[in-house]
Image (tube, rainbow, N blue to C red; front, top):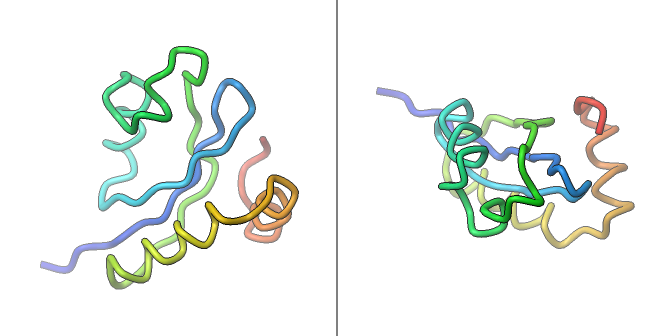
Length: 90
């Protein structure tokens, strides 16, 4: 069975971005919003979160490389990246 690997970006309630990796974006969003996702999104002040961007990759390695690259960007560069990729408004 072919598995899709996703890099995704969340827009948090406190106006921050969170980038992550998953094979199931819907399940992962539910985990983040229930407080069982990443440590970063467990803080009540960051929830609810909204998934504003997903990209599909053929391999986990490619998806996690995209996540890592995104996390290294400044806030301004993250916003530019998301706009260029046609992300939902944030």
